[in-house]
Amino acid sequence: MTDDTTTPDSDDGMLTAAEQHAAVRERYSRIAADADSSCCSSTDVCGETAADGATDRGYTEADLDTVAEGANLNLGCGNPTAIATLESGETVLDLGSGGGFDCFLAAQEVGESGRVIGVDMTAEMVAKARENVAKNDASNVEFRLGEIEHLPVADASVDVILSNCVINLSPDKPQVFREAHRVLRPGGRLAVSDVVRTADPPDDRFEALRADPTSVSACIGGAATVSALEAMLTDAGFVDVSITPKTDDSEFIREWDDELDLSDYVTAARIEAEKPASEPSNRPKTTE
Image (tube, rainbow, N blue to C red; front, side, top):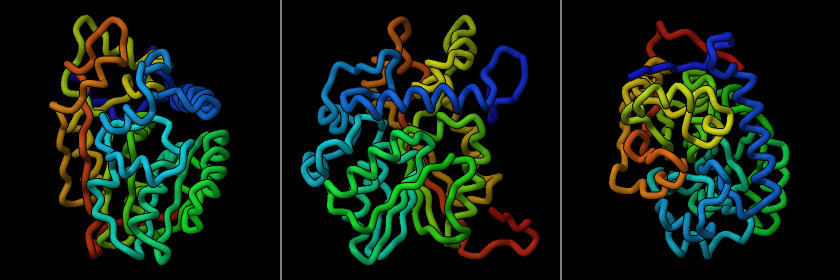
């Protein structure tokens, strides 16, 4: 099983980092213009409503009722707010915030004394999320345009980082985790729902998926293995790393490819980790 952690700028048949970013940006621009779309299918149509998709992925009816229509774009593969154990007054950062659904749920948990920041690389998605701020009367939520590999967020300014089926889209996942570590306060934590690769499809099919802009931008081709993600998080400085595949809760993954049952090779997972409360004195300092 291959464990590539970055997408090189090379001519080996794989997408370059720039090509992968462009594919993701183009797809999410279309999704932002169509509230009935979903990122995680080859056709942008999952055959279900956004509400149905959200409950399939771990949200409750109460979650759906408390967020105004237009924020839930059916983009995720789990419910990171449910595993984050958010507290009043905390500052939360959502990587790849989309229409803002998880941000608005987090804002209810942290209250008026807390703060939620959403970062997304697609201008159209950020614009949509900003429109949703007023709809949700969420004065403690803001959205910023930026790449999750280069976060527009200050050092040690965030208590909790959320992300929902987005880190797999990055061509440089180790850099994402280094940035997450940089912006977290000491003792801060990471609560992520994402997809992980559990096996390689036969006949080099996975290599073909990794080289296909549609598959990479649709939560399929960029999935890393659990062992690779554990190594990335540890190398970035995180401790108490826990990655729990949800093998009994990935029925929706079967809809992601018309020819192959991807649930045999990819599954949703909970990814949790913490930034140490104190850093080793010999650890190099990172800056923005």
